[in-house]
Length: 146
Image 1 (cartoon, rainbow, N blue to C red):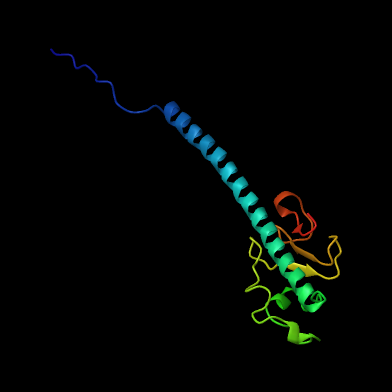
Image 2 (cartoon, one colour; image 1 turned 90 degrees about the vertical axis):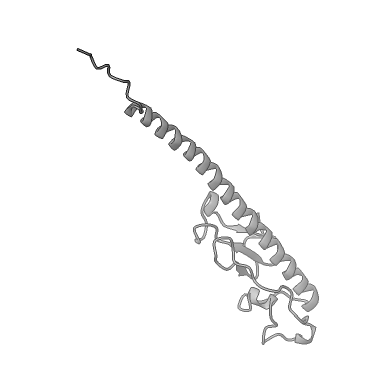
């Protein structure tokens, strides 16, 4: 009689599969942490750049019209002349900025006049990722005072 020899079965053991899944999970976590950190950093830098552009437009507004927009007129005054503008003839055709950007989290920038937090005459700011006053890290307010 012929003895049947058992061929070694091809495949992976459960332990080998678990090790591979663990390594993939570990690598995914490292990549995810780095990508999310870069995204948060990019959003903060975008907010700072937008605030700088809005501040420059507000300064041009002040130089042209000898005042800053009131809090009621808000940043909208940079796009179109407010109806209650006393020296409206000085308002440039096309405004001071083409459109108002939203912050990187999709919300409008805030404008306070006179300033409460900055050394400028006004505050321009975003509430950060959480959309609420205050906060830390990605939730911190970003304004013309930082």
